[in-house]
Length: 442
Picture (cartoon, rainbow, N blue to C red):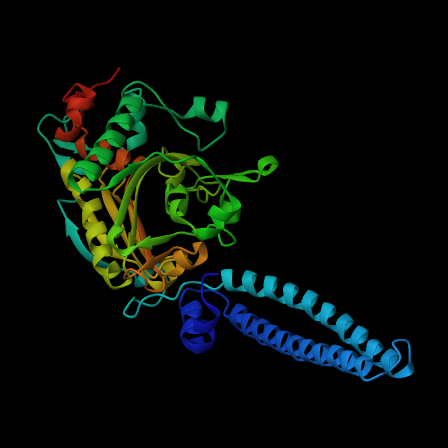
């Protein structure tokens, strides 16, 4: 369950308002409260009847020991009563199991309330908290402009990629369908170089432990991180085997510690993992479907943290800064956005988006989302920590963030570093892996 029953009872209005602020239907909260009340009523009636059955059994024993005939009228009446009570208890147990299952399902459908101070509203309410670097204009003065006008127009990444032979979107569509790009030559090498750079940065400099996770997860894992029931329509399902292709490495990596108790000395636990990511909903038709901005399969390096509850707020800022370092090393201008209640998602308590500037399309492109889930995911997965040896275990906090997602990072990189002659300069951290300082047309 995402929200404990006790918390639902004690913080009903806060949880209800949290659902409203996120644009979710608060009716599920009333349904959960009604199911909880019915469950308690059924369990209470069952306990009363069990006590009565025990009393009747004692009466039968006392009567027989007092000389009553085992097949006499008195004993028959008592046994009939015991049988009727047993039948009612069985019916109540069946109802209790049904109500319990219904309650568990309802609790999974209650969104995580946003932290206090998060701006309330939709996308327009999100707040830019800082920017880094220069957002280059698309049209740039340049004496060597190819058209002789003295103005050089930066091109969008799909034109650059085609000229450099980096993408083969048509071949990808033939092989798998629209939204499954194929990278060729310099494009494939750039993907590999970025993945290696991100993993090396987060392991060697940021102290994270690298994980190489499965690309598929079972239903329990998908439920644990909140992909189902909230986002199941966005996932690719291997129905025959009951498996889901991962939408992000967050899912398998966070589930590593499902149903575990972690000793305090092990915290914080900070992982980083590369995985291919698969998402059925690649976005509505329109401008962002050009090139590799919205695709069904993409690559991403994900950071996942398990933290003590009183340290998770600070950990969110630390994690955000780690993703920023990646963009800074690549020299890509970006901004950090604090997401509003209606724009952060079902599972997050607080979320930042990092948006890289792509001058060829003059757009801010999301390349990372960094989220604090507080105890929301850990409660679903039953991940606990023990504050002190011998102490009772408590629910810990989980966080994650992209460090970074590749498609839009690649788009921003190509559009930032393109040159008037059609080549693309290679950021210094990638030059060793690529073996060159410049990507050139083929």
